[in-house]
Amino acid sequence: MGPHAPQRLRCGGRLQRGKRLRRSRRLAFIAAGIVSSVALASLPGHTVGAVRDGEPPEAAAPAPAFGAYLHYGPRGVERIGELGEWLGGAELRVGHTYLPGDRWSNIEGAPDFLESWAEWRRAKDDRLFVLNVPMLERNEEGVDDGEVARLLERGAAGGFDGHYRALAERLVGLGVPDTVVVLGWEMNGTTYTHRCGPDPESWKKYWNRIVTTMRSVPGQKFRFDFTPSRGRDAVPWTECYPGDDVVDIIGMDSYDQPRGMSFDEQIKEPYGLQEHVDFAAAHKKPISFPEWGLFRNGDNEEYMRRMLNWMDEKKPLYNTLTDYCPHGVWQCRDNPEAARVYRELLSGRDGAPTTPTRPGEPTACSPVGLGDWVEYWLGGKLCLRFDWAQEGVKEQVKEREKGREKS
Image 1 (cartoon, rainbow, N blue to C red):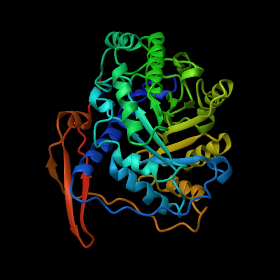
Image 2 (cartoon, rainbow, N blue to C red):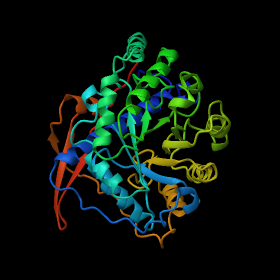
Image 3 (cartoon, rainbow, N blue to C red):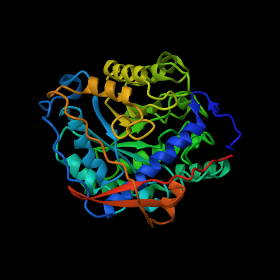
């Protein structure tokens, strides 16, 4: 999209330009995680508060099992505890990260990539590890529809089975055979190469191949989460549904957009929040919200309150807030009113809320070479700052986003 294109280019319920902005920010955050995992010392971990008696989420508290996307790598694991402290000792039982979609070796779960998450998951039996898994490599490189259709046909014929067998074996070997796999997320849009629109029938067959392949690995207990974006987008997400036998959870990624849309409209729009709940009920599947948060309507406390209340009422298996700007409330200082509501509704279950803890902000940096694929995601190089302060060495990352518009 060129600089003179309308800001509100909408396909059904989505803003594609807004999606690219959110994607680029998340990928910058992801790349920052890679720096953190190889830089000097990370910040020390924090202890999570008391466990809610080990009860199932629906019996333990009004809210569902929850977490947040906090960071791509080991820092994301550490920040789970920090966010729990900010929420008055509440326990975040969901850890969420993404496999890079640049090349097959990363989609297979490259060595040293998942270890910290696996260790966190194994520490307590009632935790959920949620992993977004791309269905094709070059997943954000603007591959055209004709090539996407050919790749989907190849996948449907079994051409990529080996990659998913390798991933399944990797997860089982790490002791996380019950990982929730958010496979081919937001397939109803145009952002990802693994989109459904160019050939829905091949897409569904390919999903079946992947699930069948991963389930064939001894010891696996995977649950597969079918997660479109809210609204119609490029195609109705119902046209991409691959079948009850290969789907365990029906999710939805739902952000506060487009500009001016009320929460009631988000519920009632075609393929919106209510249709998500109704569709899942008709197929006898639990629901989830792997991605949600603020966006086009800014620091919207009404959205935050009503979305949390919606989840309390509808009882998804889990939800994970996207916690970086512009979507988040803890690591993003731009949304103080929504942060207050989030903390009010999710705190105090195990004691009074604590003083908020937030990551520091870098003020100076030095360039860090991370390789072409990371810099491609970021649209530029990362800078790393080392702060020699009273608490010792604390590395911090500053993204330098050049922005990449597509026409």
